[in-house]
Image (cartoon, rainbow, N blue to C red; front, side):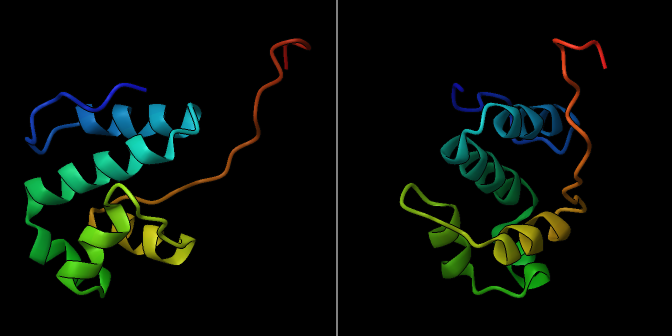
Amino acid sequence: MAPWSGSCEKTPSWLEYLKATLEDEDDAAMRLGLLRIAQAYGIQEIADKAGLRRENLYRALGPKGNPSVKTRTAILRALGLRLSVVRAQEAAHGC
């Protein structure tokens, strides 16, 4: 997945970007997208809402970051988002 080139405005376009990173299983792109969205909202504000130190938020979402599910969930929650699990549709069977 190509890096998100959208503006850092608080618009639904980044939601589609994050969905695409999950579908493509592109963790680096997802971290970058979350970082840019957090920057748009204000890193300190998102870090506070997520219960993280600002430096730890940058580290978790940086190029070498490997945030735990707990950390990722806290960041998403701070952005007003959540992950959800749904049954994958099997194209071969038309289900």
